[in-house]
Amino acid sequence: MKLVDRMRLSIRRRAGHVVLRSELAGLGSASQVSDALRTLQRDGDLVRLGSGVYAKARRDVQTRTVRPAADFQTLAREAAAKLHMTPGSAASGHTAPIARSNNGNIVLDTGHRRLSRKLALGERRVSYINDRTRAKVAPASDRRLVIPATNVAEFVRDLASRHQVSYSPTMSDQWAETVTKLAGDPVRTGPVQDLLVALQRAGKLSTAEMTTLLVNYLRERKQRVRSI
Image 1: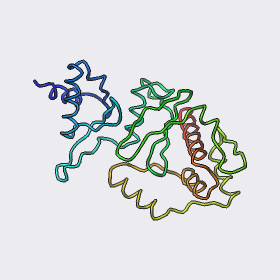
Image 2: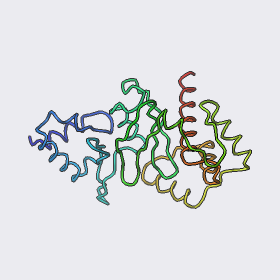
Image 3: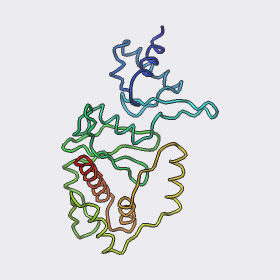
Image 4: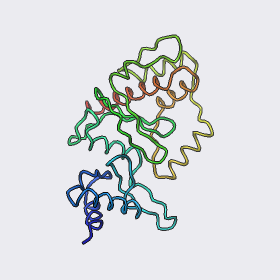
């Protein structure tokens, strides 16, 4: 059996959606594995997320378009766990919160770790926030905004009320939601996330402040679910 066929079989048998080059390295020499990975990408079995990181994919029979087997948020979370990029344990499934910005990019909270590894799918990217950058968030204006780690939802609602800001979906929001749904990438938003977007659009929050509040909100919500 050719190496590319053995790798294809190995990939199909693996659980999950993300495949690391290191998991396939033992099947052949470095150059052979590289050639086989290029073939698998060309055939639509894999898409590349970053250096040594791939996602299982499939080719649409009618359009011949190659699509990953899962949405970008799922792939980012699984890749982060496999690469031990978060404070959580891949074995336990306790990964750090992941926030989605309004442009479809992903923000990954890495705790005390500082990372610069590039992960992307098309135009969407993964960026990182850690304890150090979170503590140095620049204010959106001359006032200094103290970012809370608890009761974040109440803080966001109070901030929006004080500035008389409410969320109204724009045409671009509706278009982006329709596109992501058609692409099979479910949109996960809520009232707090919408208010954060509205506050940023109104100039009451910087992008960094909005991202930090969103990550803190998701982290707090996840901790509450675990405690139930």
